[in-house]
Length: 419
Image (tube, rainbow, N blue to C red):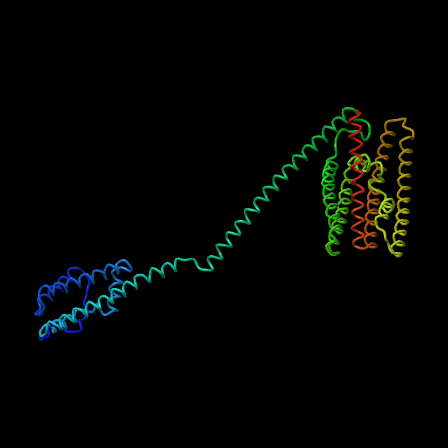
């Protein structure tokens, strides 16, 4: 007699009380299985369903479990339980009942594996979702690189601040030394005499500081030019260095023009230069014609046209130098004439001093004209020479002034030891 259907209807599993009610209803049925066999079947159902509930509670929670059971046809509405009641009204044999239990167990095993697999898959997908995307990784790498560069910039900025602090301390020492020298001059000179005041013009002090930095930059450029000529770099790169050197001399002429407005006598005296440089000085600088004589041996071999152009440039420079020198000589004669005139009264004396001071203001024009001649000579030489010849000329000029300064240092050191 068939008691249980071979295809078990889906079971609704929600809470333990509902499950117990269902088991009781099944137990009360007229199934022909023995009590022990039926209890084994019920326990098997409990074990399988308990495993399903545990896995789904871990993976997605109670509500997702019910949705999964519904998709697997394990859970259906209550109206399907009536179908189970029909299976207990017919006849059933022990063999068919056992096959039904085995079939239910097999289905539960498959469902348990399916649910277990589904419970693992979300965790893997969650891990993949938690992994940073490729775009995020690139952004993190860019942020790390930006942070590294920021640290390097900060380090360079701190080093620059430290270097600026040292330079500022050096400038303060130089300014303090200049003040002490001015006080000494004022204490040993009569302040009533013209031009012997103990006060120092701030424009000249600023120029002397700028000139010391200019010399440092010139030494650096000489080093670069020497290395460039030894390494045989391209003409384009060499031309950049040459133009930088010419602009550096243009900056010196601009600085001297500002200093001449502040105090042309201090500028033309050359106290901002070394003693050896002052020995060769002409109106606040070098003679352009003598400069050409120094550079000529360093520029060989020259083409015939270059020789002609350089000779013409030297001749025109000498003529301009002679004209400026004649103007300086006339200015000196007029100053001597004004100062040596009759000074019988104080009013005449004061008027003569005012006239002499006005004459001295013409020195600013002479200094500017002499610097303009020097600047034009250098530019004309740059046009005549090739790029490499111009580089050698700038190198020779820089080394010439460097040796003059070195000679002054040697001279001062020798006399200091003898003293």
